Image (cartoon, rainbow, N blue to C red):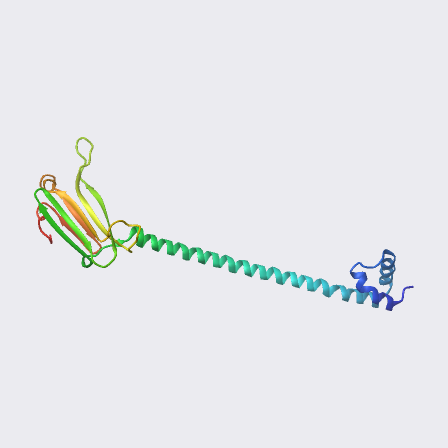
Length: 205
């Protein structure tokens, strides 16, 4: 019969599978018969498994936290990037409407030509968009153009824009005003200025 002190000395190697097949069989048989050695075997085996389990759990929890933080940083970074891109797009490409206090607008009549000059005075770049005003559809199914809306916008100065970016000239004809009930609307951020056949020759209609 295998002595207890020999089995107990060999238990670590037995647990790690480092003993010969014959020795393993002898220890296994002894553990079936000896309560003390069987208890020691259980004690030596259990902590290793629990420690491994706890270590694995901690590693998994740590990786989850890292992934969560990384994902959060990526989402925040993406949101900030989109916000910056949207802001730059707005200020560099879309702009905001110009107010009266930031714009010098003058009109001149030379012969049959009517001209409006715009100058932005707040140091920002000037971008002007125009769109036609359509009248009622005629018998031919065509909607005539009865006016133009002039919409000045202010943008942050950019080398991508051509010219000095602070002035703009828009022209029309007196004939258009007189014959077609034509109107030019200067659409500013704080109100419209409307030029018609009755006031096209006035600086402040």
